[in-house]
Image 1 (cartoon, helix red, strand yellow):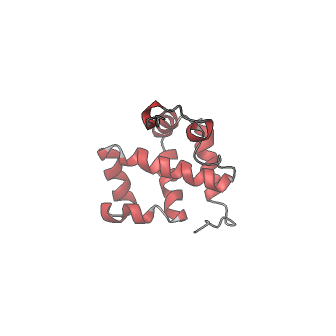
Image 2 (tube, rainbow, N blue to C red):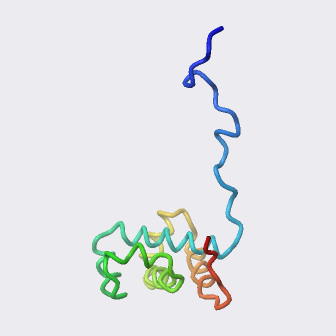
Image 3 (cartoon, rainbow, N blue to C red):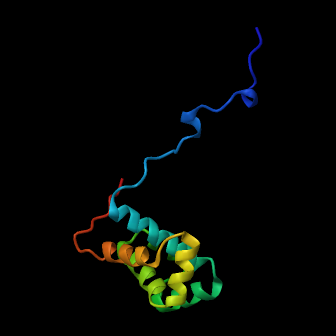
Length: 117
């Protein structure tokens, strides 16, 4: 009896399906949008330099700050303050600009509490 090679096996539906359930919580979605916005800002050295200068955060603390809801709000505020920037981010992230504004509104909700594992 011949044992099939792994490379010869077809992938089952379970192996090719999504790894996680889709995010349904608006606050989780807003946080994801803010993290994407941070990545967008960090992808351009000039934009990142301006953001760091305005927030007073150093490059070494950027990753640590990403877990702070107030910092995420400041990222979205930075992106939303300029039409060209919000349109560029929306295009890159495949979102409508109003979704970016909605994420900012959700994160600014004083009743928001981040789930920490």
